[in-house]
Image (tube, rainbow, N blue to C red):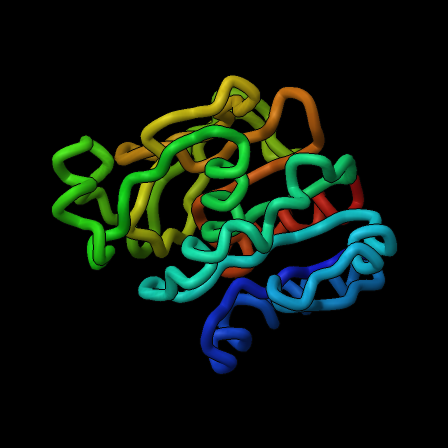
Length: 198
């Protein structure tokens, strides 16, 4: 049983960022979907794996509600974070992200070096330095939709893939926790399929 976590603030965004993940997962496994505000201990116990979905380009609500993901540190089952999901994983495990362009804290964060103008929207090339969820080492084309990037890694985070502008795929060294900044539901669906089969 796979728990799919919806990070979308707007209900309509579910159709673009969560529904496609459900369509892929249902071919491989049983699943249930919850919004991150609704996830409870019983859900986490019931789930054999977790997928944390992405959300719209200007939806940063999840970033202001990181306490809702405090369970991540102690969770011992496989997790796949997609875009916003990867950002949540990076922050939980002591990494840093650039501040999103329309953050209310933009001025202060620029002075602290946490601001980046690197945007990746559309098709990009991702170079994998090692195999990642059955994706072989080498270059793949991926669909990106994000305005922030990873600017610091926690000691337990290992980089598996990069684009010209930044880190695109990670895995924790100590756990089966994976993250991709791009959207495999749009391109590279096999990443989600392989995670389900793992």
